[in-house]
Length: 267
Image (cartoon, rainbow, N blue to C red; front, side, top):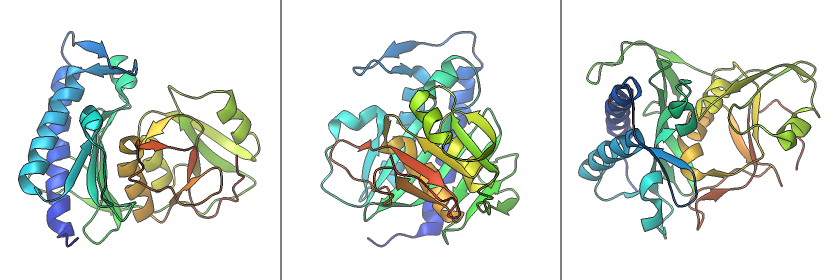
């Protein structure tokens, strides 16, 4: 598949920012609609509005690339290895409780691996993405849709195994996660919601992020791409092989997002 990565990332950046603006309009309103999906997970009008905006933009600009989104996943069963994948609002629980740790996520998967992606946290004013050349950057505001702001290249840490920094889920942390973390000499631990955890590893603010719980490919692809572009990796916890995409149900196994210097244990 021939892709103009610079043009792709311009489009992904614009759509993520536009979706973030729409999400924030709803987030800052007095009230918003919340429903339960078939799997009992919550969905809001912000999820659906952002999904519609991003899907329309991607289908218009890249009609020949398959598209998977969280809100339309039941209609998809992929038989391709290259596709765009979207989580229009990752961290819906954080959004509902107005905690701010929610993100817009768009990624390109090629041959089963996310190669380009963008993660935008509009309530946190943080924007991370891979440039066309694959290097990951954090852009500082004001996040104009047409004019790119200052770009700061990001890179993973050089971990100290005697004093590791770990980030874990804010809404889904459990005993299994704590047991895994307790195998390591941890200097400090922080909690974060949504795909921001990948980005904190990508910037070196944390050394690794283990996830011993249910996730789907749209939850992880954009953050995975950003982390890879910053020198990091995302590995299955059962065999420490690279996490792959395009699985039949889009469900991920347990995984760890990490700087390469962390000596990992399997689960």
